[in-house]
Image (cartoon, rainbow, N blue to C red; front, side):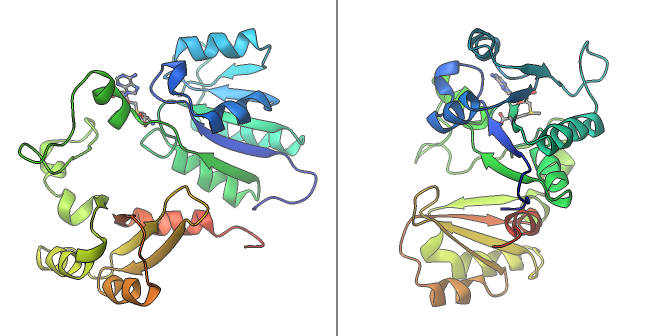
Length: 249
Ligand SMILES: C[S@@+](CC[C@H](N)C(=O)[O-])C[C@H]1O[C@@H](n2cnc3c(N)ncnc32)[C@H](O)[C@@H]1O
């Protein structure tokens, strides 16, 4: 996947929201085999303590360059590349999930462009983990059937355009994809907007189907999808597609 023989590999690993118990088994296994770990500010202190106790080689690369030891993105990219080219197993440890804010997608794109083998390991995002841990449900049949995740760096004006500009993640939408896609187009979403449908996510039978709003219903029908799905609508789907296209695949 992506790299050539003799090169190392970079794992973009989600560390969860902070509690070490919320590290996944997969993350733990990869961390245990790592030669070096480049970690962010939001990786929990107890996780760092655990890594130190294990005798792991760890380097703080928190993005804010004004912090002591903090590094800029170009520097983080260079470190990942240099260590990988030395044949090392590099873990880039990030708070929450690596693909939710936090520039994991930028790092993945960089690694792909550099021809460095990489793998992305999901983590429990603060989006889900923090409210649930605090006892606050995110949905309830009578109270709320949608969840809008936004960045506070933008304002309400931009948030209000989510339906036509943002990434939409749709659960339980498989059997209504025809109506949903045509309604979205009616509300102003570009018919060319890319759509991905992931069936049986994370299982061996995981399958991802790509299309655009104007044809996804037809593609889904032809693909005979029967399992549970997560549907992703938005331009970001094209980046995902690009990142998935690895050499030799
Ligand atoms: C750059 S984003 C990274 C998000 C991360 N990739 C994730 O999936 O949770 C950082 C923001 O996530 C939120 N966050 C992350 N961990 C948190 C925690 N343990 N408690 C509360 N908020 C948290 C805060 O809003 C913080 O400013």
